Image 1 (cartoon, rainbow over the protein chains, first blue to last red):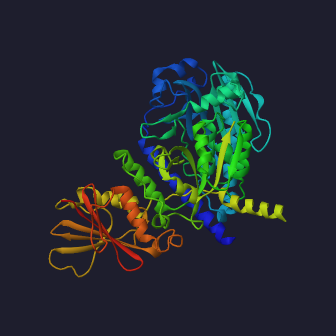
Image 2 (cartoon, rainbow over the protein chains, first blue to last red):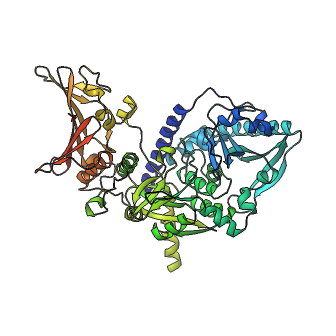
Image 3 (cartoon, chains in turn yellow, brown):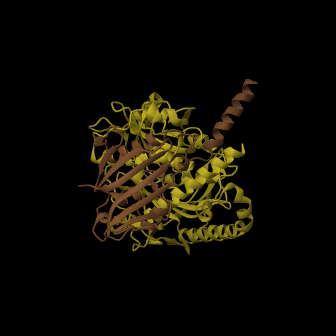
Length: 411
Length: 168
């Protein structure tokens, strides 16, 4: 038991290190000159439609059903710097912006289990004071913009993700403020009131089940090389936070129209003071499926035929698997080579190759399966580490042989 | 009893699920130079006449004539695998060879990969550089990768040696 706990601690530490490295990489790629237009972007539709403002999110497709973009620049709101500012575009039109103002995972960074009590005792009070101040400043600021106090609305009405939010009408726009005691302060600005008061996207709220199924399936593309791929799966980088599993969940669920974020799932799972100690991610997976009005099948090993059916239906599959740094290099290097040489092949899954696979003694990791290629016998998967790890490839046999849990949401 | 066992099984499975995800991107050489060692050695710059050897290197005692042997003085992960030792051979101001020694005991998943170091190194070089251009009767494999020629061979039961030399 102690050994297992030690391995898990190391796994989370490595996870956090990876996140930090990714965060540094992303930071260096962002131009720091652009400043977010506050308060106009919180109350004016004209600002949302201005070409200069839209340019701040990078290239956006006019035809993609949905795209998620981070704002490339600094954003300070109500006296506090935002940790992240992310937008949703639907067919090129900006429909929502989410500002994460304070998140305990980001503030504490990764904290090993053994240190969590000490950290909670020494830094906890400072964070609690900051939480109180940030939550109050943001609520006061939004109320001033709206000219009235927010209206309390149950965003999710049951289960682990049960959440009341405050909804404000700020000029032309609507704002949903989410606070979770000593954990999270974030708000989402939307064009419409229904988008502000519901956790589901407009398409998921209004369409019939058959129409929803058709909309999901329309996002499957078949490449000339036979790849069956899900187009437009968002990647939410975990950063220097112990948020691997919840980031993967957020990627899956946002793609399926549930407008909750990594930070919501982290809070609900009980990831506190930067630690996953005593957290319950499994229950959050089930709660998320409930809130998304989806069923959630689960197997104790990745099953390709189930995954293939899910991908063909336009739904990604979450896989928990064994992971090693050595094997991860192979997948990264192969992805790089495959870009230059589409005829390149992964090693055959023979006895020799299996010696290099991670086993139950290796670390744990979750990935999102976003496609497959039947002729090449490959699974295509994506990590929560940034765009550079989108659509990596692995032989079906390896994914099956190294996995220990898989989730297949369906309507 | 069956129910209790099922609950325990699910509990054990999810003890892992609750935490998940690892990856190491940063390591000593990467932190110091800003690029992985295999990318560094595959670029043309380190092989140029008089080129500065980036990273912390120590000159080995007992240098003879104009041949210097240097050891990398920081940990490095090469082809995703922790190297036990990295050395450079420099002649008259030009690097002629980098030698990377892998030791099974240094692997992060050593237990899982017992006996698998050679397979792992070969698989990872192939993933990066493609199939070997040559295989010697002794089992040494030669790969061409960007500006370098990479040769890899077993050295005893638990070691693998990889040489980088400039591609001609």
